[in-house]
Structures are given as C-alpha cells and as structure tokens.
Image (cartoon, rainbow, N blue to C red; front, side, top):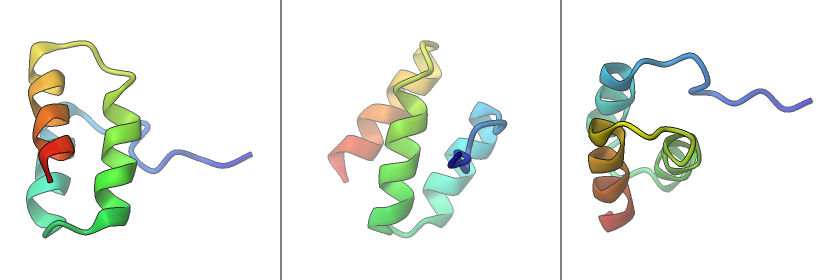
Length: 53
C-alpha cells in the first residue's frame, strides 16, 4: 500500500512545504492530492495557490 507523504501534516506544515517546494511539480501534485481531503478555509486557500502554480 502506498503511503501518502503529507498524510499527518498540519496545515502550517503543508504551507511550509509549499513555500520550500520552489515550484517543484512533484511536491505541488502531492500537496494538491492532500489538500483535496481538507475542508478548512485555510486549506482551500492553499489549494488555490497550489493550482495557480
């Protein structure tokens, strides 16, 4: 079974991964997958930023 990299990350950790990812496509795709499972306003805002990249 494939383990999701960001499964246990808090939103602030996801935001940090986004900032430090430097536009890396693999990181953006992993973040997008994870953020689709989140429903908070903060997660939706980060998802929008990831999609814009």
